[in-house]
Length: 317
Image: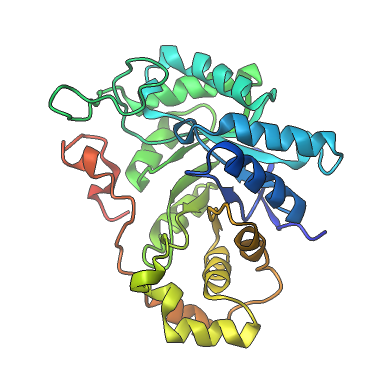
């Protein structure tokens, strides 16, 4: 079976350059998706406390280990610390709870989901709102949260730590103050938001960049985003006997991005993985570069509207 190539992280661990996203894959759907993904060669699985599917993801991995398809060390499991747990006192407890959700004894990569903390009410109130339906944010410094995450590495609960939705200035501040370097920054990345500047910044600092929503949540009824439905990309796809999404994923991998397309459809899960047998030409890459408008699918408006000091998207990258 052909596996995805891997990239060496700044701590020596290897991370596959393509992963399965599981946002909104719940109940048996998530479990079936992960099992199929492992069967076709995926070894990098991305989830989060927010997605509320860690138990299903963990069961799928454990079942595949029990079947002898993989060993635990073959799997690169990524999950995230949700925003309500930014208080340093809460970090270890919730990480242990997540491990117990998975039924596994370590997490490969643990990311801070956002630089902005939300008010903690209880473990299940993920979007704490006040009586006026306003999201309740906190001023916890993400550096304090990050330092609590460093302890998880020392305890052996997680192998690597990183961040998500951080801009270059926030990342620089972590780098200047950390003891254990982040290995990864996970951000939205697609041809519309190709993140070349942030990827270059990360690369210079030996940090990998994972791209979520790499296919921009395709909407067939209105033929959006353009790069999935355009005649130009269709021509490229036809040349290689591939689909437009496969061309897009190949393009992102070529930019040094680690895409994590989300799907629960077995055919699409297989299709998204089948991108390592062709290379785009310089001209074809230029066509895809042409879609970069900087427009986001995940704009974090609930945070933006409150003008929070750690809102990450108010600078260019």
